[in-house]
Image (cartoon, rainbow, N blue to C red; front, side, top):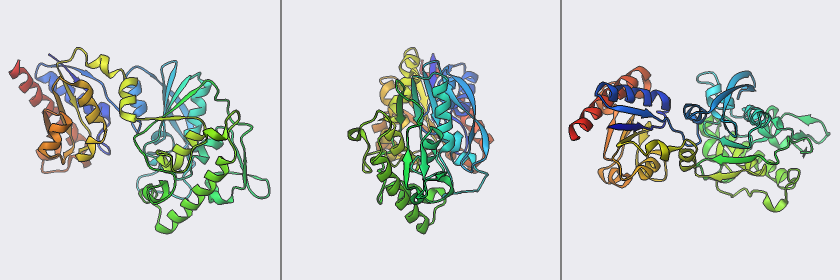
Length: 376
């Protein structure tokens, strides 16, 4: 018997690879062979997942969310590059407990995109999860060559003040992107502006006060007007995104700027399963183990475990998760044979203890392996 171990990360606790390795060790202890395929859906962890699937990690120096230079990487297989916000300029690049909602910039993400273009990528997957900024992608565009100017005609850094001080922009030096397919892999459908927009919904998560959310909202609207009246070189006004377009509000408005560059938005989970060749990996496996940090009714709305279960059918699919809030009906609807929750196996909180999470995931792997062997 061979089992495919294909989990998402346990956010804040274990990476997808760490989860897969722990379960795999447990299965091996029970005499069950495992193939490991750590997954992602376009959020943080996407670069690592692509590297585990065979891409090469390319190091790149970028500006983090706080403006300090840091080491990051993008994944590249010779054709497709995977670039993510989280490890270039996301919340993870800030010191523990520090949030900078009014000055965090997407500049580092743009630097990584530029490096992928220079490396020869013909397709770039833009992974927007884990962002720290609400700059509408102005920082990214600056890194790609767009120049923003104030009322005096002086070039300004969008991170050094409200977006409303930008009077116009010059895209004539934008890095040539012709022939490069840009793909935004995300399941975030929020618009740019309004009560469901980037500032209102995600601003508080990045440390913004109600008053700061209002400032960010006005700035995003102002930037959208500027970009809406200035198509990129070779672009057409008819192709420009609208502020109400689903996904425009992803990652503090980065979704809007990516669409301005001509990127297309795709469902993150299905796209990444295709990118990581899930169907080929599952073909010779008798069972599948997937998982995520917390599984609940929201998982039914196309989150990774739901897509894995659907595409693996009719093979039995088991889930190992940090915490489960599923009802029996929801589990059946997801197509999961059984759900193992680490939180149910310890009086301590595994989500706050990576070592405990690894040990429990390994124990679950052994238990599951024994049960699978008993059914042969």
